[in-house]
Image 1 (tube, protein in one colour):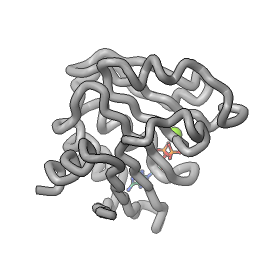
Image 2 (cartoon, protein in one colour):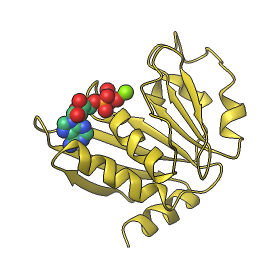
Image 3 (tube, helix red, strand yellow):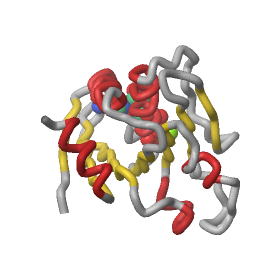
Image 4 (spheres, protein in one colour):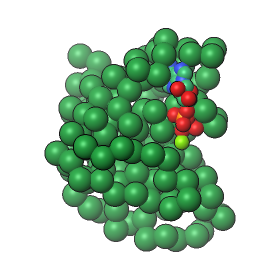
Length: 151
Ligand code: ADP
Ligand code: MG
């Protein structure tokens, strides 16, 4: 399977990389973010929001699970860390089927509710400020997207 890597040396580089990705996104796209606490999932999402021309400050939606922002495309930002179990259905489908871009932090925690086709992004904490970002496209749409990002 194809896998793409990017290394960043500070938070701004992670934001900038996400901002670049945002330029290629289309309505209905889904990004599943994985990585330990502090790996940079929210930092990445903030950069993506900047690329989607979202003016509001994007903060971790930990206590609300889902936050919605208006931009060039709507952004649905989810942090499912506090979802009790993978069967707890909070109406995710409505977002996945919507016209926005959905970003899910800790995506594996909602198990089978996550559509099979998505862009999986893993953030690895290598050093205080160094991160390895690994993109794994799941499905044709996301393979195409990765090719565009890395061309
Ligand atoms: P998560 O959402 O994965 O828990 P956050 O984005 O909230 O992570 O926090 C990441 C923390 O790590 C922030 O304080 C950020 O400033 C810091 N950081 C340091 N280096 C990087 C980097 N290269 N990329 C992203 N964040 C970084
Ligand atoms: Mg976070």
